[in-house]
Length: 127
Image (tube, rainbow, N blue to C red; front, top):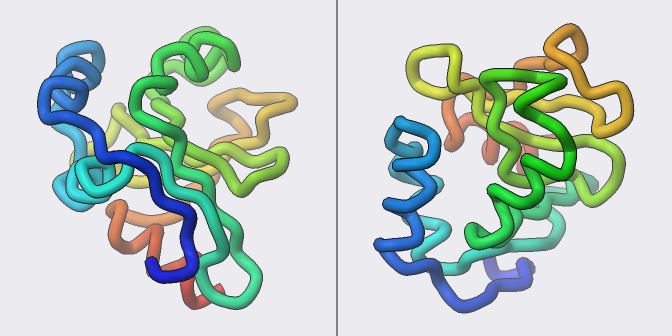
């Protein structure tokens, strides 16, 4: 995390509010990162860019992208800094991470990126 831009961490109350909104607990590693920095941005590995959106913007961004309408059951939490969003698949046990294009967002376009948040981060680091 030394090459990433970090921000002030999220409060436990803010995390609880998102979890209440979702009706599910967020993955522990994701929660740990958000407590350390609500919003993270930078390169992981050689070529993979990651933006984890600030916790306080998640509801607004998911509504703005129409995720509930176009890809119900997906909860976007960030992007590659370009046209691809990353999110949790709330329809599956363990909330695996998926990616989907912002333009043409639909469940048909959702692609698995990791069975867990940790696996997702490792896949970005390894390229």
